[in-house]
Image (tube, rainbow, N blue to C red):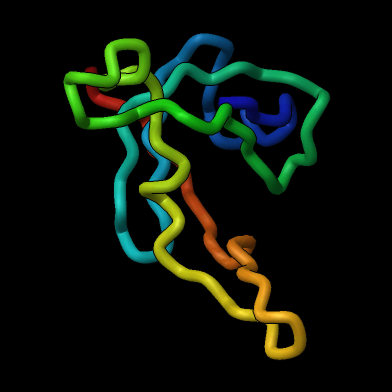
Length: 98
């Protein structure tokens, strides 16, 4: 998971630390490694889509990283076009206890 360097300092995270993302509905992710970078805004996190699955048949994604889809528990529908907006979900970071 990418985390802005200033935000990492403020939150007490360093490169390679493990974090758990917790959304506004208290859904928790699997632990992810923190990548400290300037290439993201201080008020955002970024992680690659497609990981953190719980099916052992998904060999490359099974319990590796966090599932971004698991953390999307709220959505809004555009009243004009019917498109789904999923940018209404927010997370906080907690230190993983591994």
